[in-house]
Length: 183
Image (tube, rainbow, N blue to C red; front, side, top):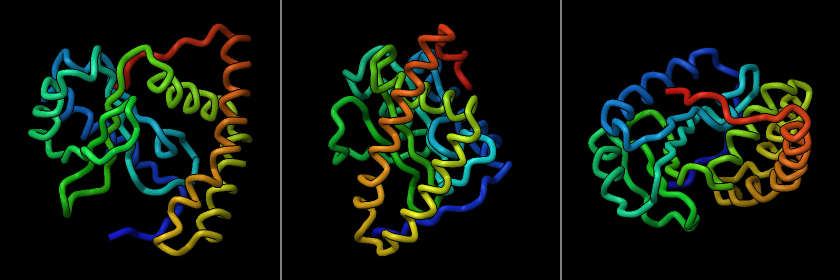
């Protein structure tokens, strides 16, 4: 069942929720996980968001998948083989558990670096983060039917790419590198 999009005020418990799940994943994966990071809007203090914890796990290779799939499943997540993005493997919570998205990406790739840079730029630029929050609230109201989720996602794309362009300029100016792994 597809749910409608709900944007809520920032919840200060989100970082501790991330740490709890990340600890479980780190224990299950060990050194297979080169990084485990809190990404997405819930990772940005003060940013309104869908109350979904997004976690990125960076690995040396996406194949063979069982090297990380089995431990992630043992940690309580379900592999979503129907994910169409070829640069990541996607896992979700088990039915009845708190909504959590686990994105597994190959370390050093653009797809791995993108969410880290986006997160760090919004953390460093709270005015831009608030523009993002306003846009998300507007779009959630505009695309309020469950079958309109794809329209919500598509409507965020121009803002996201404009922000990543600004973030890249910022990164070049300050010599940005990803901070240490969150877990």
